[in-house]
Image (cartoon, rainbow, N blue to C red):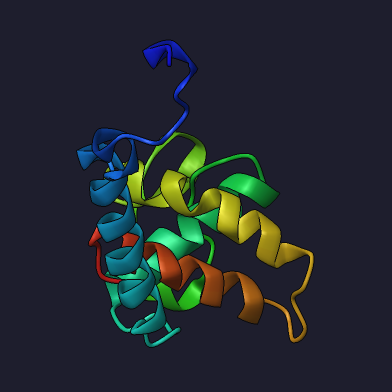
Length: 128
């Protein structure tokens, strides 16, 4: 009998790789975080980041247009009088794909995109 003809699986081929186990653990923990998410924006910081993401998608500028936020002086006045957030763009940019998807299902307006925006807080560790 030729050893090359033997097609029996070896013990090494049946064991999961360390990378596969790590990816599985990551996906399980991510699912727990997303499912434990309250689905709402709890902090004013999250509302500001949502406003920036929404306006960047719809108006083409990362500005704040919500009158309630403007009256609370959460914006920094820039060129041409536009008001911008004092945060970095990363938290708003990371949420933009989900906010964009939410724009197709907004009924009443803003609810689906706000809900999907809040999911990024779980994924990226930023309060939403």
